[in-house]
Image (cartoon, rainbow, N blue to C red; front, side):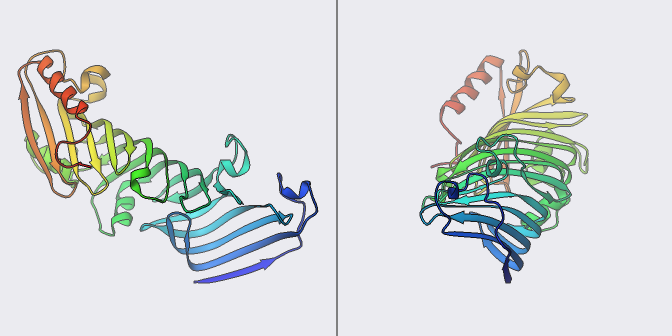
Length: 329
Protein backbone atom coordinates (compact mmCIF):
# COMPACT_ATOMS: atom_id res chain seq x y z
CA UNK A 1 0.00 0.00 0.00
CA UNK A 2 0.94 3.65 0.22
CA UNK A 3 1.89 5.78 3.22
CA UNK A 4 1.82 9.58 3.12
CA UNK A 5 3.30 11.60 5.99
CA UNK A 6 2.93 15.34 6.41
CA UNK A 7 3.34 17.65 9.40
CA UNK A 8 2.27 21.02 10.72
CA UNK A 9 3.82 23.40 13.22
CA UNK A 10 3.64 21.85 16.72
CA UNK A 11 1.02 23.40 18.99
CA UNK A 12 0.57 23.05 22.74
CA UNK A 13 2.25 19.91 24.15
CA UNK A 14 0.07 16.95 25.06
CA UNK A 15 -0.93 16.49 28.67
CA UNK A 16 1.76 14.65 30.61
CA UNK A 17 4.46 15.55 28.09
CA UNK A 18 8.05 15.18 29.36
CA UNK A 19 8.79 18.67 28.01
CA UNK A 20 7.12 20.17 31.07
CA UNK A 21 10.29 19.43 33.05
CA UNK A 22 13.11 20.29 30.65
CA UNK A 23 13.73 21.91 27.29
CA UNK A 24 12.23 20.39 24.16
CA UNK A 25 14.68 18.52 21.97
CA UNK A 26 12.06 17.63 19.36
CA UNK A 27 8.36 18.10 18.77
CA UNK A 28 6.05 16.84 16.08
CA UNK A 29 2.48 17.10 14.85
CA UNK A 30 1.98 14.80 11.89
CA UNK A 31 -0.62 12.89 9.91
CA UNK A 32 -0.08 9.40 8.51
CA UNK A 33 -2.41 8.57 5.63
CA UNK A 34 -2.57 4.95 4.47
CA UNK A 35 -4.12 3.23 1.48
CA UNK A 36 -4.25 -0.57 1.04
CA UNK A 37 -1.65 -0.84 3.83
CA UNK A 38 -0.78 -3.60 6.30
CA UNK A 39 -0.13 -2.79 9.96
CA UNK A 40 0.83 -5.16 12.79
CA UNK A 41 -0.45 -3.99 16.18
CA UNK A 42 -0.25 -7.37 17.87
CA UNK A 43 -2.88 -8.64 15.45
CA UNK A 44 -2.40 -8.03 11.71
CA UNK A 45 -4.51 -5.31 10.08
CA UNK A 46 -4.82 -5.69 6.31
CA UNK A 47 -6.21 -3.47 3.54
CA UNK A 48 -6.00 -0.45 5.82
CA UNK A 49 -7.47 2.80 4.51
CA UNK A 50 -7.43 5.97 6.59
CA UNK A 51 -5.14 7.98 8.79
CA UNK A 52 -3.58 8.57 12.20
CA UNK A 53 -2.64 11.92 13.71
CA UNK A 54 0.23 11.95 16.21
CA UNK A 55 1.39 14.86 18.35
CA UNK A 56 4.31 14.55 20.71
CA UNK A 57 7.55 15.81 22.13
CA UNK A 58 10.89 14.53 23.36
CA UNK A 59 13.38 16.08 25.76
CA UNK A 60 16.18 13.88 24.45
CA UNK A 61 15.66 11.26 27.16
CA UNK A 62 11.95 10.59 27.34
CA UNK A 63 9.22 10.95 24.77
CA UNK A 64 5.47 10.71 24.49
CA UNK A 65 2.98 10.93 21.64
CA UNK A 66 -0.80 11.21 21.69
CA UNK A 67 -3.01 10.75 18.70
CA UNK A 68 -6.28 9.92 17.08
CA UNK A 69 -6.98 6.92 14.86
CA UNK A 70 -9.39 7.58 12.00
CA UNK A 71 -9.63 4.62 9.62
CA UNK A 72 -12.26 4.23 6.94
CA UNK A 73 -11.71 0.48 6.69
CA UNK A 74 -9.44 -2.37 7.82
CA UNK A 75 -9.58 -6.18 7.72
CA UNK A 76 -8.79 -8.23 10.86
CA UNK A 77 -8.62 -12.00 10.28
CA UNK A 78 -11.11 -11.67 7.44
CA UNK A 79 -13.58 -9.45 9.33
CA UNK A 80 -14.04 -5.91 8.04
CA UNK A 81 -13.93 -2.96 10.45
CA UNK A 82 -15.27 0.38 9.23
CA UNK A 83 -15.37 3.89 10.72
CA UNK A 84 -12.67 2.99 13.24
CA UNK A 85 -12.17 6.03 15.51
CA UNK A 86 -10.51 6.60 18.85
CA UNK A 87 -7.53 7.83 20.87
CA UNK A 88 -4.08 6.25 21.16
CA UNK A 89 -1.01 7.11 23.25
CA UNK A 90 2.59 5.92 22.87
CA UNK A 91 5.68 6.20 25.06
CA UNK A 92 8.76 4.03 25.80
CA UNK A 93 6.63 1.74 27.97
CA UNK A 94 4.30 0.79 25.13
CA UNK A 95 0.98 1.74 23.56
CA UNK A 96 -2.47 2.45 25.02
CA UNK A 97 -5.69 2.76 23.06
CA UNK A 98 -9.23 3.72 23.95
CA UNK A 99 -9.95 4.95 27.47
CA UNK A 100 -6.45 4.21 28.91
CA UNK A 101 -4.98 6.54 26.26
CA UNK A 102 -6.98 9.44 27.67
CA UNK A 103 -7.27 8.79 31.42
CA UNK A 104 -4.53 7.34 33.60
CA UNK A 105 -7.03 5.08 35.38
CA UNK A 106 -8.76 4.12 32.13
CA UNK A 107 -12.10 5.43 33.44
CA UNK A 108 -14.25 7.94 31.63
CA UNK A 109 -12.14 8.24 28.49
CA UNK A 110 -13.28 7.78 24.91
CA UNK A 111 -13.18 4.17 23.73
CA UNK A 112 -11.83 2.99 20.40
CA UNK A 113 -14.89 2.19 18.30
CA UNK A 114 -15.65 0.57 14.95
CA UNK A 115 -18.58 -0.79 12.97
CA UNK A 116 -18.48 -4.60 12.60
CA UNK A 117 -21.00 -6.75 10.72
CA UNK A 118 -23.70 -4.14 11.17
CA UNK A 119 -22.97 -3.83 14.90
CA UNK A 120 -20.69 -1.73 17.08
CA UNK A 121 -17.35 -2.78 18.57
CA UNK A 122 -15.83 -0.80 21.48
CA UNK A 123 -12.28 -1.59 22.61
CA UNK A 124 -9.85 -0.45 25.32
CA UNK A 125 -6.39 -1.84 25.97
CA UNK A 126 -2.67 -1.53 26.24
CA UNK A 127 0.43 -3.30 24.97
CA UNK A 128 3.84 -3.13 26.62
CA UNK A 129 7.04 -2.60 24.65
CA UNK A 130 9.71 -5.28 24.51
CA UNK A 131 9.95 -8.83 23.21
CA UNK A 132 7.28 -10.20 25.57
CA UNK A 133 4.67 -7.73 24.43
CA UNK A 134 2.18 -8.21 27.28
CA UNK A 135 -1.30 -6.94 26.48
CA UNK A 136 -4.67 -6.36 28.09
CA UNK A 137 -7.83 -5.86 26.05
CA UNK A 138 -11.42 -5.13 27.04
CA UNK A 139 -13.91 -5.39 24.17
CA UNK A 140 -17.68 -5.17 23.78
CA UNK A 141 -19.65 -6.08 20.64
CA UNK A 142 -23.31 -5.12 20.26
CA UNK A 143 -26.01 -5.97 17.71
CA UNK A 144 -23.72 -7.66 15.16
CA UNK A 145 -25.21 -9.77 12.36
CA UNK A 146 -24.21 -13.40 13.00
CA UNK A 147 -24.48 -14.52 9.37
CA UNK A 148 -22.27 -11.70 8.11
CA UNK A 149 -19.75 -12.06 10.94
CA UNK A 150 -19.25 -15.82 10.53
CA UNK A 151 -19.11 -15.59 6.74
CA UNK A 152 -16.41 -12.90 6.86
CA UNK A 153 -14.40 -14.70 9.54
CA UNK A 154 -14.40 -18.08 7.76
CA UNK A 155 -14.56 -16.98 4.13
CA UNK A 156 -17.48 -19.37 3.61
CA UNK A 157 -21.16 -18.43 3.32
CA UNK A 158 -23.23 -19.68 6.27
CA UNK A 159 -26.93 -19.80 6.98
CA UNK A 160 -26.59 -18.93 10.66
CA UNK A 161 -28.82 -16.00 11.57
CA UNK A 162 -29.26 -13.83 14.62
CA UNK A 163 -28.03 -10.73 16.38
CA UNK A 164 -24.98 -11.06 18.62
CA UNK A 165 -23.72 -9.17 21.60
CA UNK A 166 -20.57 -10.14 23.46
CA UNK A 167 -18.07 -8.92 26.03
CA UNK A 168 -14.48 -10.04 26.55
CA UNK A 169 -11.67 -9.22 28.96
CA UNK A 170 -8.40 -10.91 28.01
CA UNK A 171 -4.71 -10.57 28.79
CA UNK A 172 -1.59 -12.37 27.67
CA UNK A 173 1.60 -11.88 25.72
CA UNK A 174 3.09 -12.48 22.31
CA UNK A 175 4.85 -15.58 23.63
CA UNK A 176 1.86 -17.71 22.67
CA UNK A 177 -1.67 -18.83 23.46
CA UNK A 178 -0.50 -20.53 26.68
CA UNK A 179 -0.20 -17.04 28.24
CA UNK A 180 -3.86 -16.13 27.73
CA UNK A 181 -6.30 -15.56 30.58
CA UNK A 182 -9.70 -13.95 30.39
CA UNK A 183 -13.44 -14.16 30.72
CA UNK A 184 -16.49 -13.11 28.77
CA UNK A 185 -20.07 -13.63 27.76
CA UNK A 186 -21.90 -14.05 24.45
CA UNK A 187 -25.63 -13.74 23.73
CA UNK A 188 -27.65 -14.43 20.59
CA UNK A 189 -31.22 -13.35 19.93
CA UNK A 190 -33.60 -13.95 17.02
CA UNK A 191 -31.26 -16.80 16.13
CA UNK A 192 -31.41 -19.52 13.49
CA UNK A 193 -28.62 -21.96 14.34
CA UNK A 194 -29.97 -24.98 12.47
CA UNK A 195 -26.93 -25.35 10.18
CA UNK A 196 -24.38 -25.24 13.02
CA UNK A 197 -22.89 -28.78 13.18
CA UNK A 198 -23.13 -28.97 16.97
CA UNK A 199 -26.80 -27.98 16.85
CA UNK A 200 -27.52 -30.51 14.09
CA UNK A 201 -25.97 -33.24 16.24
CA UNK A 202 -28.01 -32.19 19.28
CA UNK A 203 -31.26 -32.13 17.31
CA UNK A 204 -30.62 -35.69 16.13
CA UNK A 205 -30.12 -36.84 19.72
CA UNK A 206 -33.29 -35.02 20.79
CA UNK A 207 -35.16 -36.48 17.78
CA UNK A 208 -36.35 -33.07 16.67
CA UNK A 209 -37.60 -33.47 13.12
CA UNK A 210 -35.76 -31.55 10.43
CA UNK A 211 -35.99 -28.91 9.24
CA UNK A 212 -37.12 -27.28 12.50
CA UNK A 213 -35.13 -24.07 12.09
CA UNK A 214 -36.78 -22.58 15.16
CA UNK A 215 -35.68 -25.29 17.57
CA UNK A 216 -33.22 -22.88 19.25
CA UNK A 217 -33.77 -19.14 18.80
CA UNK A 218 -31.48 -17.76 21.49
CA UNK A 219 -28.34 -18.63 23.40
CA UNK A 220 -26.20 -17.51 26.31
CA UNK A 221 -22.60 -18.56 26.98
CA UNK A 222 -20.45 -17.53 29.95
CA UNK A 223 -16.83 -18.53 29.41
CA UNK A 224 -13.29 -18.36 30.79
CA UNK A 225 -10.08 -18.48 28.78
CA UNK A 226 -7.09 -20.31 30.24
CA UNK A 227 -4.25 -20.83 27.81
CA UNK A 228 -5.44 -22.41 24.55
CA UNK A 229 -8.74 -23.53 26.11
CA UNK A 230 -12.10 -21.84 26.62
CA UNK A 231 -14.10 -23.21 29.54
CA UNK A 232 -17.82 -22.70 29.04
CA UNK A 233 -19.21 -22.36 32.55
CA UNK A 234 -22.78 -21.76 31.37
CA UNK A 235 -24.37 -22.73 28.06
CA UNK A 236 -28.05 -22.10 27.36
CA UNK A 237 -29.74 -22.88 24.04
CA UNK A 238 -33.30 -21.62 24.32
CA UNK A 239 -36.34 -22.54 22.25
CA UNK A 240 -40.09 -22.41 22.68
CA UNK A 241 -40.54 -26.19 22.74
CA UNK A 242 -37.22 -27.41 24.13
CA UNK A 243 -34.11 -25.90 25.67
CA UNK A 244 -30.65 -27.18 26.54
CA UNK A 245 -28.47 -26.07 29.43
CA UNK A 246 -24.97 -27.25 30.16
CA UNK A 247 -21.26 -26.58 30.43
CA UNK A 248 -18.00 -27.78 28.95
CA UNK A 249 -14.84 -26.76 27.15
CA UNK A 250 -13.50 -26.11 23.67
CA UNK A 251 -9.89 -25.69 22.58
CA UNK A 252 -8.58 -23.24 20.00
CA UNK A 253 -8.24 -26.09 17.48
CA UNK A 254 -11.95 -26.84 17.76
CA UNK A 255 -11.88 -29.86 20.11
CA UNK A 256 -15.08 -30.25 22.13
CA UNK A 257 -16.12 -31.60 25.51
CA UNK A 258 -19.67 -30.46 26.28
CA UNK A 259 -22.44 -31.78 28.53
CA UNK A 260 -26.10 -30.74 28.21
CA UNK A 261 -29.36 -31.37 30.01
CA UNK A 262 -32.62 -31.03 28.04
CA UNK A 263 -35.53 -29.01 29.43
CA UNK A 264 -39.06 -28.92 28.05
CA UNK A 265 -39.83 -25.29 27.25
CA UNK A 266 -37.79 -22.12 27.72
CA UNK A 267 -34.81 -22.64 30.06
CA UNK A 268 -35.13 -19.14 31.51
CA UNK A 269 -38.64 -19.79 32.83
CA UNK A 270 -38.70 -23.53 33.53
CA UNK A 271 -36.07 -24.03 36.23
CA UNK A 272 -34.25 -21.98 38.86
CA UNK A 273 -30.63 -21.30 37.95
CA UNK A 274 -29.16 -23.77 40.43
CA UNK A 275 -31.27 -26.63 39.04
CA UNK A 276 -30.64 -26.09 35.34
CA UNK A 277 -27.40 -28.00 35.02
CA UNK A 278 -28.38 -30.55 37.66
CA UNK A 279 -31.49 -31.55 35.78
CA UNK A 280 -34.39 -30.80 38.10
CA UNK A 281 -35.67 -32.03 41.40
CA UNK A 282 -35.30 -35.81 41.27
CA UNK A 283 -35.83 -38.97 39.27
CA UNK A 284 -34.32 -40.29 36.10
CA UNK A 285 -33.07 -38.03 33.33
CA UNK A 286 -30.59 -37.96 30.47
CA UNK A 287 -27.35 -36.11 29.89
CA UNK A 288 -26.08 -35.38 26.39
CA UNK A 289 -22.31 -35.37 25.83
CA UNK A 290 -20.72 -33.83 22.75
CA UNK A 291 -17.09 -34.70 21.94
CA UNK A 292 -15.16 -34.55 18.67
CA UNK A 293 -14.63 -31.19 16.98
CA UNK A 294 -16.68 -28.16 16.02
CA UNK A 295 -16.74 -29.37 12.42
CA UNK A 296 -17.47 -33.02 13.29
CA UNK A 297 -19.17 -33.25 16.70
CA UNK A 298 -19.79 -36.69 18.22
CA UNK A 299 -22.87 -36.74 20.47
CA UNK A 300 -23.76 -39.46 22.95
CA UNK A 301 -26.24 -39.89 25.78
CA UNK A 302 -25.91 -41.03 29.36
CA UNK A 303 -28.77 -41.81 31.73
CA UNK A 304 -28.55 -41.52 35.52
CA UNK A 305 -31.05 -43.11 37.91
CA UNK A 306 -31.08 -40.22 40.39
CA UNK A 307 -30.10 -36.61 40.72
CA UNK A 308 -27.48 -37.50 43.32
CA UNK A 309 -25.72 -39.86 40.92
CA UNK A 310 -25.74 -37.23 38.20
CA UNK A 311 -24.33 -34.59 40.52
CA UNK A 312 -21.54 -36.92 41.61
CA UNK A 313 -20.68 -37.64 37.98
CA UNK A 314 -20.61 -33.98 37.01
CA UNK A 315 -18.43 -33.06 39.99
CA UNK A 316 -15.99 -35.86 39.12
CA UNK A 317 -15.72 -34.60 35.55
CA UNK A 318 -15.13 -31.03 36.72
CA UNK A 319 -12.48 -31.98 39.30
CA UNK A 320 -10.56 -33.89 36.62
CA UNK A 321 -9.25 -30.51 35.52
CA UNK A 322 -10.34 -30.45 31.91
CA UNK A 323 -11.85 -32.30 28.99
CA UNK A 324 -12.07 -36.06 28.77
CA UNK A 325 -10.57 -36.59 25.35
CA UNK A 326 -10.67 -33.55 23.11
CA UNK A 327 -8.69 -31.19 25.30
CA UNK A 328 -5.46 -32.55 26.61
CA UNK A 329 -2.36 -30.56 27.50
